Length: 326
View 1 (tube, rainbow, N blue to C red):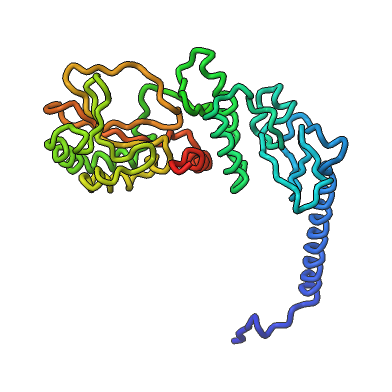
View 2: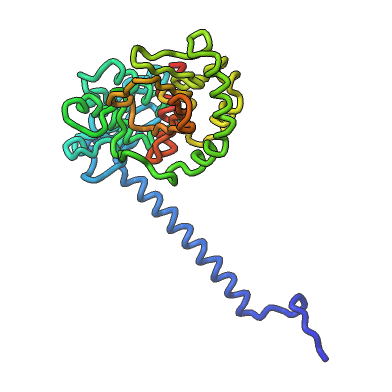
């Protein structure tokens, strides 16, 4: 019986010919791809060109050179400056065509004029922080934040379900209560640690509701808070008094712990006290309440979580814009 080995059989001529044909085909495809890339690049408007100032309808592209020149609406040419003298201008995300259509927050161009002059000092400060963030990282995913800053000045002019006084993010849905699935992990973590959270509340409550014991009284309404996080900063002494609750907060995935929009702590409502209606500072967060049993004082653990419709890139930018250090 004969045994054939693939390693000892000579390849027929047509196999070798097929290998050469395949190699030639791959080289042809590569050359065609390089030619296509070259044509695509040459079709883009040249920065500083007289006819490059108007983007095509529906276009979302703009070009910036290393010196800060762009081929978008209202871009100023800086070719007369030397490289060492060039200063990168702030970036606004608007074009004239898109401004007319109400969609202009998607395309970055270089301009100051499109941000509302009547905006508050706080809004202008946030806008400057957004520009600084974009210079360090990217404008990608910043469209809604930019639009929200521009429209904040108009928010108080009309009736709306959402009317935050500090920052409004467009296209964020609002419902009275969100389902558990929106933050299933964090809800389950809080519920699993409920016994130790309740014990630590009882521990600090027995000292008495007094400022010298870490409590903050909120006026004549009979409200008091024992803050663990206040405006994105941990209250060290109170966290040491409730170490297990503090560790629970750190284990949450969506807890707003890195910017001034987030807080957490025990909220106490005294006998006869009532809560009036009010708007929060922003619509980018949800406030989670974990309540004790019916017996005893009316108290909740309040925790600020990211709204599920705020994207990861937006959360990172808002952490930068609302950093407690700014």
